Image 1 (cartoon, rainbow, N blue to C red):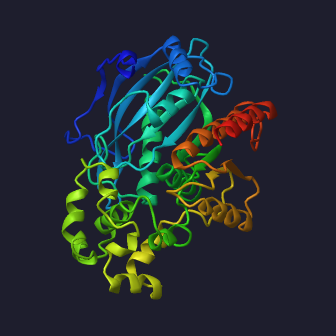
Image 2: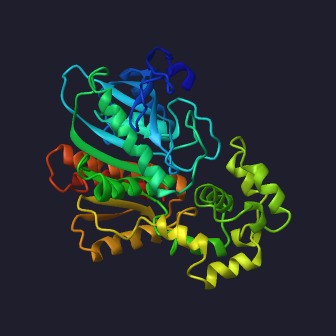
Length: 416
């Protein structure tokens, strides 16, 4: 089905030599932009019908072209490197101005990235066919990005977003984007953490260059040292996250001379083999203890519990993104039955932001019994209603039309 929709046109629009003399590459420079997919309204209508997606909630208005964008960005070590992402462009005839939406994808272990209409790319197409220009950064080390991916690392997540926005602005005229001044930021799971980090970094460090209209982080692990760290000591369906986190942080922060030394046997020899950029998460989860802490040596567990200056705990603090004061509206979506990201991350972020004086913070319960996967589907629709309200003139946003929310509630009741 997906292959039927693919109309690949690998026409390279831009190709610059990263090492060309007298042309110093700066963060945000476009290195390559290639059209990789075109999908029509009729094809999308058929896909919506097959997957029982309501066109009332998610309208199909425009054909969509998808571009793979390779651009320069600054890695946390200061080196300017190549990174990549996808750009979803609605093909409109009316030349109306369009908002830019940054969609941050969830955890990805394998470093390849295919182009199609499934999963989060399908979500991006859903926004684009209703008039949003949508960008989905790959982050560092994924797809055509250099270096390694640093999981749940706030600075690198934000930097890949910020430099992709810069690159998109440089493509504005050549791709006929017709962007207005609205900038929306969202993402799910790791993407929720990345969305929050991007909003935070823009307001605190890049306020003179960008203005966020609103953000909607969904089911993210924002409170790394509090709510989310508790998972390490409990039965957990995805223990593979912990070594992924430790390995990435060790690459940047140099926490341990040899990452293998912190793991018990046989995990000290098994774990480095698992994270080769090719192994699926589910395969790794099956080979690790269901309590993540059981793969770590006792002395490191004790350090984490008793020493507030323990290096790993300190870098977790640096990557918390829940305790700050957004000046622009934020909506946090969560589901209580989420088995991967503790829903209390969203509660913690909401409470901290309100206590810090933020006025326009929304907390949206997307589903009481939904697991991590199902939660994403409903969170995205709530997010779209929220963002649409700004397009319709709401200065600080709203949860969307009552009748659409009622329809969504009825749908949830049947799924529950």
